[in-house]
Length: 246
Image 1 (cartoon, helix red, strand yellow):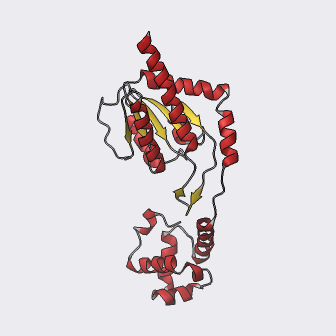
Image 2 (image 1 turned 180 degrees about the horizontal axis):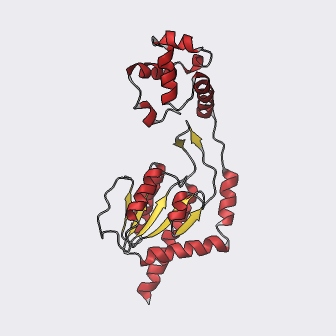
Image 3 (image 1 turned 90 degrees about the vertical axis):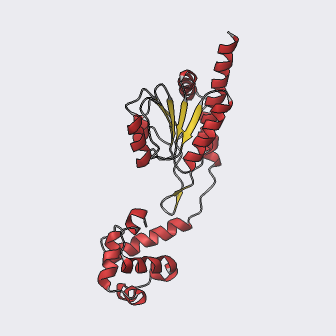
């Protein structure tokens, strides 16, 4: 609800309202607009401007959204053992095995392997790069969506993109900058129909519902992503070892 883009556009008086709203969350839902104006020492017009700048059409909509915002923050994330069990069963099937084999083939023949991700997915990218490097394949991770893309450096690389939603605009823009290079893209994400999945040559989807707190803090499990990274790494190591013995 309180996106960074919204907050940075607030003026000094509107920031007073924002700070009060955040600190007095237990009482704000019972306040009328005049009461809030009095407590924050601003006019009701300032309150309405504040509402508009955080994407609310009026004070009533602000109260409605704020109530949902607070309930979202308070929700308890349930354990997803059943989903994990089903996932581990499904990945033993032929469809997933074929996709993993296809991913291994791309990684095996790539000049280098580049992992892309932001936030917790960026941490997974760092883990993936270390894992792939450990088996003797050149790999690096990029967790900065504005990392420069020098011409020619990534030719013949495989990009492994880790993203829960598949809709992170910074990653989408980053992939567009890679589009002019001869790179294969593998997406590890929750769904095959997201924007990033559609940009990829190969998608390893795990179909988990996203768990979020505070409308923006994503705590979706990374166990499926870890599974895919380790399977790809181990199968690639086998393939490379076979080449050396031939």
